[in-house]
Each structure stands twice: as C-alpha cells, then as structure tokens.
Image (cartoon, rainbow, N blue to C red):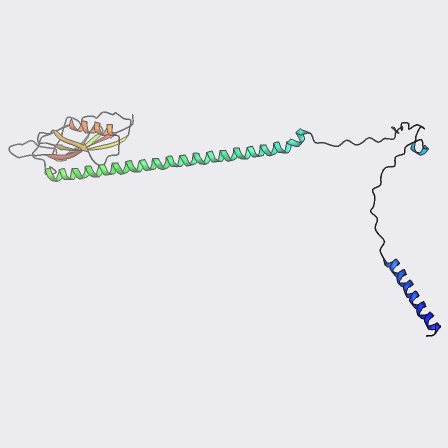
Length: 261
C-alpha cells in the first residue's frame, strides 16, 4: 500500500476522533451544583471592615437607624370569644322559642280535649234524658191504656156517685198548669220547693183515684230540667195536690214552670 493512502486513513481516523470528542464535550450537560443559602457575613478580628478594635472589641450598633418592629395585632380573649357568645345567645333564643311553641301546642291540645270531653258529656246527658223521657212516655201510655183516659162529659154517674167534674179537665194555678179529664182542681196546686236555681218546666204524669187523691206521680214529657232535686220537688208537690172525685181512676199531668229567682 502506498504511503499516501496510509497517511490519508490515519488522518481521517484522527479527524473523526477529534470531531467525536468535541461533540461529546459540547453536548454533555454540565453537573448541577446544589445552591447554597446565602449566609450572614461575620467579621472577626481587627479588620476595619469588621469594625474591630484590635482586640476583638465590641461592635457598636447604630441605634438611631434601628426601625421599630410593628406590633402584631393579637385578638384579646374578649374579642375572640364574642362570636361564640353571640352564637350561644342565638341558640338559647331558638331553644326558648321552640319550648314556648311546644307549650302552646300542648295547651291547645289540652283545651281541645276538654272541649271534646264536654261535648261528649253533653251528648251523653241529652241521650240519657231522651231515654228517660221515652221510658216515662211509654209508662204513661201503658198506664193510660190500663186505667183509661177518664173521658166523657165528666158526669161521674156510677154506683150512685153524682159528683160532677170539670168538663174541660184542665186549668192553671199559681203559674202552673194541669190536665185531668172529667176532674176539677180542689183548691190550688201544691207549690213545689225550689232547691236549685234553674229555669224550665217539669211535667209530672199523675194517676188520681175516685176520691181525687194522687196515688201515683212520675216525671213525664215534655220536661226541660235535668236537675234531680227540682224534679223530685215537682213530683212531691203533685202528690200533695187534690182533685174532685169521680168514677174510677183518671190519668193526667201537672206542668210546673220554674223561673230563675
């Protein structure tokens, strides 16, 4: 091989090697050094820059140029607790309002229950009064069917008894009324006592014998007074009332009118 070719190959190899080394050095990233925090330079000794006094003297501070550090605004305990106090007060008001509303609901419920109980008692009393009146009316009907109504002209001409009765068989006495076919009232109606201060009327169904004596008396219909004492007083007064005699037994009524005193 000729020398010129050998020199050319060697030169080419050296050129390639140099080119590779240059590229590698250029393209290779430089190592990153860690950044260090900047410190405070402190001078020791008698250096003029360190304001030393030749023997490690004391450094004199420039007091006139020192700026005061602004004071931090620290909330006081009272200011810090104020929102909590307001929140607590609102909670207490809400609890008080809820309690008041609950009491009002309970009171309304109690009043409603009382009203319903009164209505129930009134309905029960009315039903009981109606039942008693129906029973009395039924008893009066049975008595009338058994003993007759004593109708006719009221002549009373049986077994030689010629006593004449009241053809009308009714009348009033002392503000009270009576009805007994064929009989007359002897004197006046017995006045009942007034044990209770109530107003209304009590109808007493009576049964009168041939001599004019009331042999049976009971509360009849219509009666608007439910007071037991007033009813008993009316029955007692009816028993003490006298009528004229007649033939057989007569059935009628006495109506007592009670007025508030």
